[in-house]
Image (cartoon, rainbow, N blue to C red; front, side, top):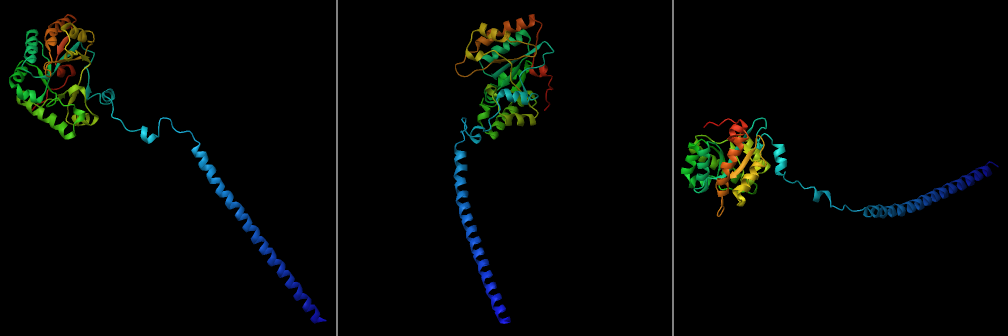
Length: 291
């Protein structure tokens, strides 16, 4: 009797273990099927994402990296940024203006301009070109002896932003040394040819204690105008503190007799209006540098 119950228990255990194994296999198969179902779905989602990106409208102006390239500041921007170094005019609080002459000296028009200034008792500012100083030392000597102010206008009238840093500094230093032979000091004012200059050049000049002097009244005499046109270009735009641009030396074939003829009328009109004509240093109250 006892033996029969033992056999029955063994049979029951065997049957239970079989059911457990079947359930495990069924669960494994079910999990495998679920994994297989999930995997294809995961793959199918990826193309949808890429498709959504490619459907995004393009940037009409182009990618940022192609469009937003750094650009040099304009002359107007540089004037605003470096107000104390890059100067266009003097203070408007006094009825004073400065006559300035570029591209001196030559042996034709500069002596004629000096004759007018001497006759009228006016001191002006001459921005001289170094290789012309070498060519006409007697004219430079006369400019200084008659009480006019000299400023640097480069050595050979190069377009300064287009030359290297080393060339730029050589242009300035070489002309400074030439000027100092006649004045006894290194000038602290400079006018870049064509009024053109780069930000890096402004920063270097500032480190040397120099002021960049451009202008706010342009006679446009280099265009070969009539004396009446030059006079109008100046007097129509004069305000207290103005810095007036003329030329007393030109390029080949340029006729500056219009400036020579217009100068007396300009000077007399300004005097009648109680406007005093001074040098740039006087207008800006700059100290004359010592040697």
